[in-house]
Image 1 (tube, rainbow, N blue to C red):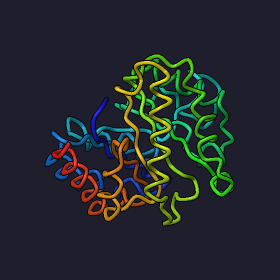
Image 2 (image 1 turned 30 degrees about the vertical axis):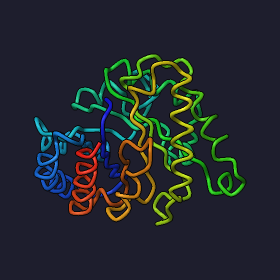
Image 3 (image 1 turned 90 degrees about the vertical axis):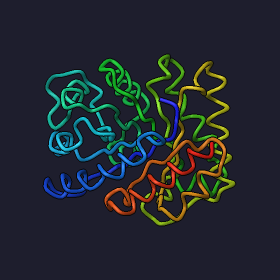
Image 4 (image 1 turned 135 degrees about the vertical axis):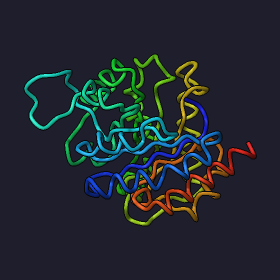
Length: 253
């Protein structure tokens, strides 16, 4: 799992045809840098099959935005991890701020989701991040520390990625300072070291209004192994530029 990664989170955007077209446009870019950077995209659940068909046997992995905490059963509107695996999904986002707040997902739910995803042989992409109020109160590291408690019983570090996304920067155009990002990533890596063999296996990404122009600055920071991209992942040109910058950085490391 270690290495440089670029993951695109399409969120609740696009239509079936535009999703397929976007996936097709990304194939050439991913093929150019497949030996230096790993790429994944997470379309809406309804589009996973169609987008996955376009990406089949390509350098781009298929990701999902969420999995149910339940195995199967009477859970209207939800998708189980087994259903996602059937579609060729390789990784699933867990704990994104929009799910924590809009869907009130707490640690118990996140732990259950992680277990279901792991049972199906997929990778968990655990999202961490503080609110604006916590950031302004100087509580960022305390929030990250608490959110990482869901990892206390985790053992398969090869199937875990972490994405730090300050909530106050998601979709706002605001970007945390390099010093802030570095401090948070250093803290995450420190906690992973304390958990045993985790640090060597776990990729730690940065997310939050990621744009091509910011990439050199982000990748120059220690502990940043790639990015989780939101809005820019819906634009093939911007997402392709991000992938190429990450690939160039990989050559120098």
